[in-house]
Image (cartoon, rainbow, N blue to C red; front, side):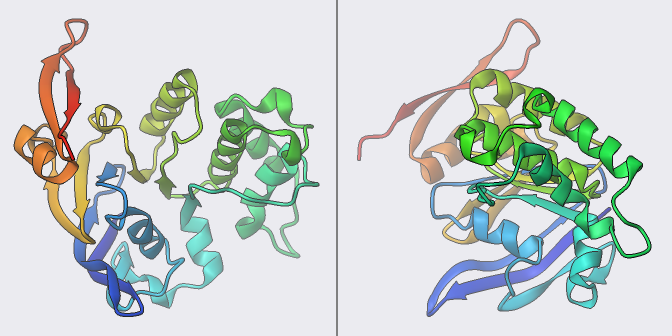
Length: 255
């Protein structure tokens, strides 16, 4: 499914947070959203998902304005995993993931065997099947993140929007999650802080001061000059001899 944004803008009071952002994400593409803290990444993701009412511009799904779709229709197409995931402390892990099936249920199509199988698959995909009976209140931050990603997978979306999905995860689960996302047959837009991990995306969009200042292949977008000007770091581009992949080593510019 193709996702487009045209001249998106959003502000809080008189302070602009996102200004005149336009982009297009092709079906099946993984677009990484990068930028310094406060650059507008999270707000842009919420605008793309229809969770915020844009001040200006429009969002389109396969050419149809998001505003013409019902919340149920949007939820069947777009799943969102935000940075801070909260839910009822009394729920079990499996209960949380089952919430991902809600957009597909109705009086004529209640929760059934197929939904249970989808929930089980989602739990297994993030390595949480063995904790299905645990209470949400007992989980660590990383475990909660993996459960929320499983909920999104159970939603069976065509577009997956992730805000810092590797936040709280140890390095093993970070790499496992990124490999899982890369293999999903969906369109993905995700904000990332780790620029080495961002190199695995099909394209990168760079946010700075609420504006999108660059968008393109990672090797082109992450130039040493841009890293210096936007992220205020001195970057050395290295090659991993194992697979010839680009790896950055960073030194912080003095404040």
